[in-house]
Image 1 (cartoon, rainbow, N blue to C red):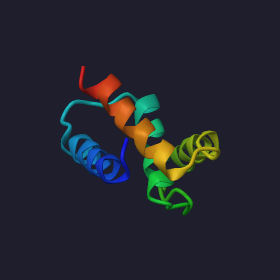
Image 2: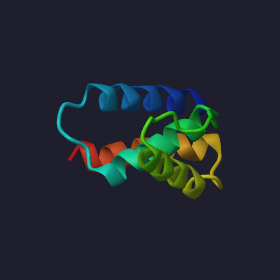
Image 3: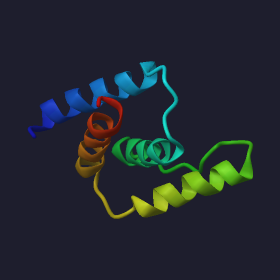
Length: 86
């Protein structure tokens, strides 16, 4: 994927998820969260007031730690297409 197209496709996928009205399974949400954070180079600690949610988010980020920004964008797009646009 060309860089500009990748960024456009990623932005569209994020907008799709943000407007998605059905419940999204927790495992998919956590993967989307991790890919989004890596794609946006946002490595801040999870900000939930619930420690258990923070632990799950931190674990998702740890699992995605070895991918670069472009891979994270591609993975986010692929996950949206596979799981939400069925």
